[in-house]
Amino acid sequence: MSLSSLSITGVSYSGLGRVLVSLLGFALAACDVTVPEYVRPDTPEKAAWQDSDQPTQDVGETIEQDWWRGFESDYLDELVGTAVDNNIDLRVMAARINVAEAGIDVASAGGKPTINLGAGVDITKHTQVSGSTTQYSAAGTVDWELDIWGKFAAGTAAQQAEVKATEADWRAGYLKLVSDVASSFFFIRQLDEQLLRQQQALAQNNDILSIHENRYREGLVPRTLLLQQRSEVKLLSQQALELERQRTTTENSLATLLGRAAGEYQVEPGRMQEVKLLDVPAGLPSELLNRRPDIIAAEYRAKRAVKLVGQARLAQLPSLGLSARGGTASFALSSLLKAWTFGLSPSISLPMFDPNVKARIKVSAAEAKVAEEEYRAVVMRAFEEVENALVTLHSRKQQHIELEDRLTYLTEVAQQNRNRLRAGVISQLELFESERSVLNAEQEVLRNYHQILIDTVLLYKALGGGWPPEYDVASAQQ
Image 1: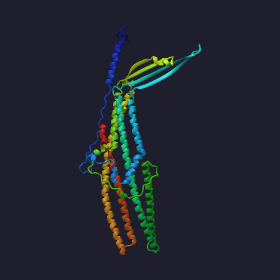
Image 2: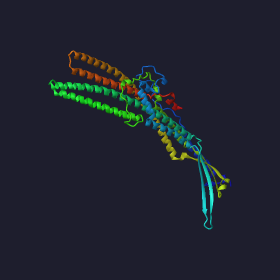
Image 3: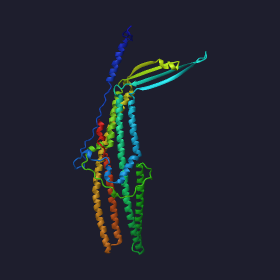
Image 4: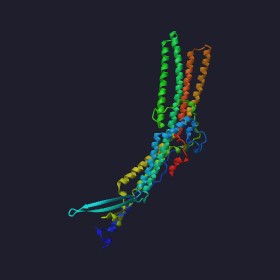
């Protein structure tokens, strides 16, 4: 009897096969197995920055990779070098790159054959007769799921994008580290200047207090004026202690950035003027943001999410596996390898009916949407940070001109008061008051100088620092 003549409830085996093939065809036709192409998420266009009234420069000529050297501070250069070599957080980020690279092997492992080998000894004890029988055996299996649709290749491409994103994370950490080191160093220098002037103010107010005490003993000033001046001296002393506290805690923070234990590193006192104000290039192109590390990382993670969507869709297609088995057995170890058995069995699985596969597609599509929106959010935040940094830096520089003019006026007043004191027109107390105003104005100029330095650092950080062209975000399109 031929196979075609066999039937169960009126359906032949060959007819059943055709029905199953048809059902399988319909099931595959209902599945979306297209692999989406990555397209960069759309974001608002930005041709230039608000305060840009200069011709736009070429991207490659705008910011140097070691931009902080423009401050012309050897001390700062040394601190940055030490931090890059020893910072613990930066080392953690570097280790994560190794983890991501190892993930490529994990992603591609599913499409590679697996081999299992085994050997054994079986000893059978006979109860009716003395003695036993020993049988030796060896066996091996090879299992291999063929990547005929590119499912594992898509997963590998997704992990390669994650490696690039992790490298961008490291560059973002590098940029943050440099910015934090520079900001801490500038703050310490500001505190050094403030402490110097605070000590000068304290000395002058102690002199004023001495005058008040003498005049109070002579009955020339009321006790309230004496107490008020004593209060002023105490206030200046308290402010000096607070400045010293801030300097010590900032040194501790800097030590951590340098990879040193807090309290184990001290910055030598210095002057703020040893740090030169860095001239930010005019006509900054908006394309500079294409090298901003967090944007690059978000770009690659959006690309990774799209690749995972493709992998999830391809997982619906039938998977073909090959299993090879071989083995041998013998009662004598010397003849174990003389005879072998071998078998090869292909297998096919139909995952399009697996609800887990369908769920994975929905999850990967939702995650791709999240990655897309996160990319847009990073870009929009970058626009805001750069605009704010440019506006703030421009305003600080304008304020610097006004503060220096004010200091010039107060210095002239103090000089005239010195001349008037020599002429006996005013008292020593009035001169001290005018000189104290000069010291306060100098403090304001110092604070403004420090703010310009910090705002410059924040601008370069917002622009992503300086990186070679190969780190441009456009590489994620490839």
